[in-house]
Image 1 (tube, rainbow, N blue to C red):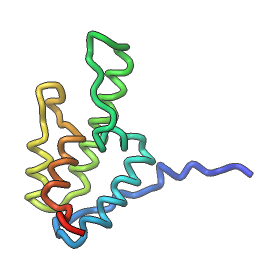
Image 2 (spheres, rainbow, N blue to C red; image 1 turned 90 degrees about the horizontal axis):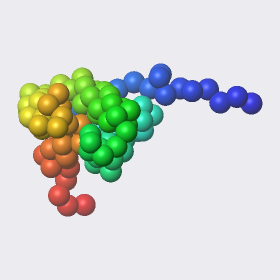
Image 3 (cartoon, helix red, strand yellow; image 1 turned 180 degrees about the vertical axis):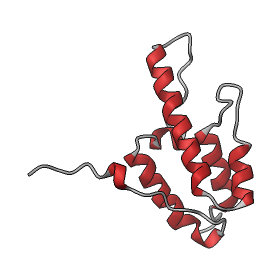
Image 4 (spheres, rainbow, N blue to C red; image 1 turned 60 degrees about the vertical axis):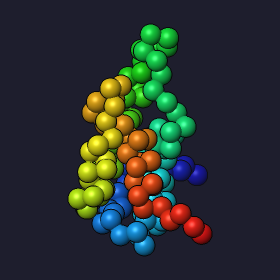
Length: 115
């Protein structure tokens, strides 16, 4: 039996900035990130390789996945506060947007502090 690759069929859930919706949305978004192979970048587990010390292809692949994740985050939010948090997540190394930093800022804003 052949397994169907349905990762391209997975749709992005949208987040409207309601704290009560954060847990479900963030779980769904992280699952989407896993399907699209940028979850390690999103979580900060995988960092941008230093350009001089590694393979240029690795740097390009990281930047491509990071940009895709960053654009998906932008696309998935429908709230001005969320958008501004994501939009502010730019660094010198990733001037087009830092996916992990954007995720961190969203988590700091919306993730409950207590169980």
